[in-house]
Image (cartoon, rainbow, N blue to C red; front, side, top):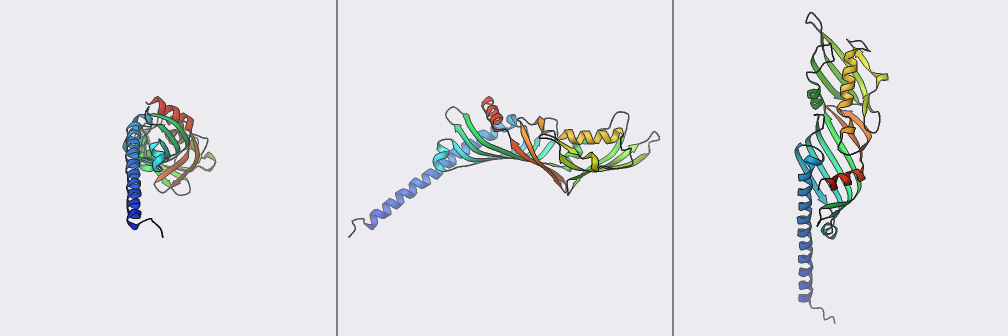
Amino acid sequence: MSRYHPARRAVCALALSVLAMGGIACTRVVNRTAERRIREALPDAIGPARDYRVHVASAPLRSIEGKFANITVDGDDVRFPNGLIMDSLHIDLKDVNVDSRHRVVRHVGEARFIMTVSDRSLDQFLAGESPAGESIRKTRLYFSDNNMVTVTGERVTLLNVGVPFRLTGPIRAASATRVEIDPRRLEVAGIPFTGAILRFFKSRIESSVDLRQFPVPVQLSSVRTERGRMVLAGSIDADALLARAQAER
């Protein structure tokens, strides 16, 4: 007959439960502290935003050791260095190792991003601008499905008459850091195909999301548009991100 009394089993079960709950509580404290510190560093590390949210996920013992399996950052209305507002920015960090005592990031395994720019934000960024020697008014920009962008407006003549124009073309990734409107499939109405207005809008749209302005090197892997927005995705140089995190101490 077993000497392991039911009461003793109950005490052991209770003790294990308390230890488990203590581990969970401790993990939450460690994770929340890490989340707060990361959140406080983001305006300087990435740029000002209306709001940043950080979530740290890891097993209890690994969190206490400063080893985090996954850290996600979500920002709303993040300002690019050139003034363009990114409606949303999502960063996913994998396998992050932090020296909590010295507040040093030791390792970042992988870093990926997804950023979204609405046509409203790009519209506001382009508002009121015209190429030299031209007057443009009522400019509107639209993103639609199938990676298409459309710009409409009026070119003002010397007699103050507004002549409507429209240019439409597909957005594509031109390099690891730059998007472009594919010139081979560009459709233009109301302005010369090789004129200053066309060159102006094509250049301004392409330069507005030049990812060389991102605080750390990135690699653009995809760009797509859907109704009302453009979505860019890719990877972040983990070594450069690590170096910047250490520099921001």
